[in-house]
Image (cartoon, rainbow, N blue to C red; front, side):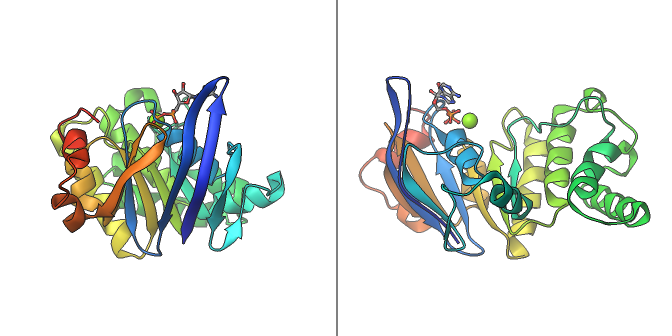
Length: 240
Ligand SMILES: Nc1ncnc2c1ncn2[C@@H]1O[C@H](COP(=O)(O)OP(=O)(O)O)[C@@H](O)[C@H]1O
Ligand SMILES: [Mg+2]
């Protein structure tokens, strides 16, 4: 379970988060929706301790993490995968090396075990031939899939997706949706940051909409469809 309570953060004189509260139950996928610059990525980064709110609390499995030290945060980052906007692959490493990196860094697995895990994972993602390629030689869609594949190497309990379909064509978007749904079926808890509303509707159980530093609306898909306030419609029409 992930809980964010009264999250506030300013950059300089700009108050970005004015008290954001939401929770995600085990096995749920929550959409965190909002226009560019409303602070979605800052919230995701704060969930793994890469940033801290000025005030407010973040609970992961009941533990408040904003006061964690770097060592404790390393443990959190093993369990909570962050699929970065753009994949964030290491450009100087092959796909194989990129996937091996977290395992070599954080586990004592043998190279033979690592090799087997990578070949299984790349098979799962339809990328068996990509092992020896460098990120620069991959299409945008492949980079995003490799980024997701790498995030899964540590078998996380939680996944934070930061705009995983941004810039993708419909076929690659569908592939990412299928992976998210498949992972959800295994019981993984996730947060999907996006403004790709069709994807949000395809994979999320519920959504929270950020507007002007606050959650302007939250609800299940049914509640979203029935929203009479007009807030959700604005987001769907791209005016949110
Ligand atoms: N390190 C930083 N320094 C200064 N301003 C920042 C920093 N990180 C984020 N911001 C500001 O916070 C706001 C929210 O950023 P971000 O979370 O990246 O938005 P989103 O992901 O919703 O597009 C932006 O307006 C940005 O200018
Ligand atoms: Mg962002």
